[in-house]
Amino acid sequence: MSHTSPDASHKQVSQDEKLNLSTKLAYGAGDLGPAFTANISVFFLLIFFTNVAGIPAGLAGSVLLIGKVWDAVNDPIVGVLTDKTKSRRWGRRLPWMFYGAIPFGIFFFLQWIVPQFSSDRSTQVWSLFWYYVFIGVLSQVFYTVVNLPYTAMTPELTQDYDERTSLNSFRFGFSIGGSVLSLVLAQVIFANISDRALQFVVLAGVCGVISTVAIYWCVFGTRDRILAFEAKRTEIPEPPSIPIKEQLKIVFSNRPFLFVIGIYLCSWLAVQLTASIIPYFVVDWIGLKDADVPIVLIGVQGTALLMLFVWGALSKRWGKKVVYFMGMGVWIIAQIGLFFLQPNQFGWMYALAILAGVGVSTAYLIPWSMLPDVIELDELRTGQRREGIFYAFMVFLQKLGLALGLFLVSISLETSGFQESVAGQTTPVQPAEALQAIRLAVGPLPMVFLICGLILAYFYPLTREVHAEILLKLKERENANKSAG
Image (cartoon, rainbow, N blue to C red):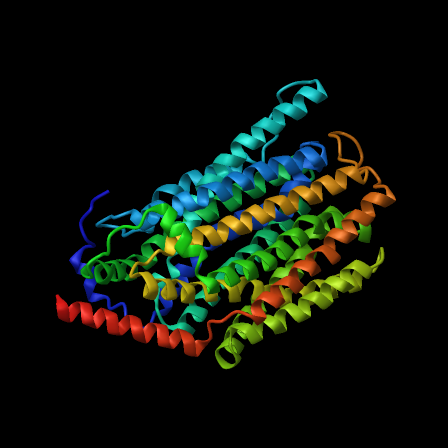
């Protein structure tokens, strides 16, 4: 990659201008692909392993654990590399997305086929285990390659406190909208294809293509704005590089950043734990059919999408912390209701799904709106911008916690006597112990994380006023540097 500054023709786009609609839409589209693939994986990959590929729950959980742990490990590596990337045509972030988009779509698709390695069941199970581990690791690598640089773009597109909330509203509008659309596609495909294995192959193929196209929309739609930021950034003399060990010390000495990490980790553990267990809960406890699962999930994600812009508007008036408290309070009520739900209470099932969606939307919006403010605080203290490493370590800890959470859920299913499906046989009836484990995983366990998130949010120190003061000091420093130059 070239080590020259961004093309001068892109300097005509002022980084101080308000973002236009086309740029916000293009930026939002960048989260459509990861939303499609992550949503389908979270909701269906564990149940695909147990009920289609026929892998025992504990072994299936190990596949997810290995993939997520590796994903967490490669996040900081990619984050640091994107911070150091220099490209005349693309800036720091966009090259990763441009070259990683197609492999990202291909390896996502390969996770959803069931190769036949042997007629012996034990050999087949272990062969599938290693196949899914290998493909899963590569899939997670390319997910990081396209998604981590994308998430680090927010503070490069705008420095305005409220506009960042608006920008994240577009981002998560596409994210949740993509989640809803992926579930609609799942519902249509499940209803029209009877072969369970073929259902997932078709769904993965469609989602892979849409995901790849959306990433390219983001790359070309945000390029001018990103290069305008790069032109402005490279005009200022860059301080000497800080060794990675020192960078880690700086990152974890940033107190507001630790709060944001904790808030996001708790919120998303609740989201992902509920999402991974809900197909089992809907079918094995409530008594609905497999084809009904996407409808329940659409109730959650569709409501979250509608509420996203409502919460964004309320955040401008009352602040991020107040909105987070309101959303989490509603969500906790929904989690309590899910635990006490009884079989065949279909109406209450859908009502609670909608109620949960009201709170889930704040888990998307608020933590990611807080993180750019933390990055500016770090820049004020150190004189360097390290978006990549901050975003990387936020995602690193989230994925590490998620990997452990999903692994514990799968182990609890197996130790409670959960019966996986075997190809060609009817779906087994689950024992009472397995049903109780499913209920605990869908209600009380996520609720504990939500309460922890509320405690952390209460003590989060960066208000709108504090952030305005940070930006003022950064502007004064920038003007002083220009005068000195």
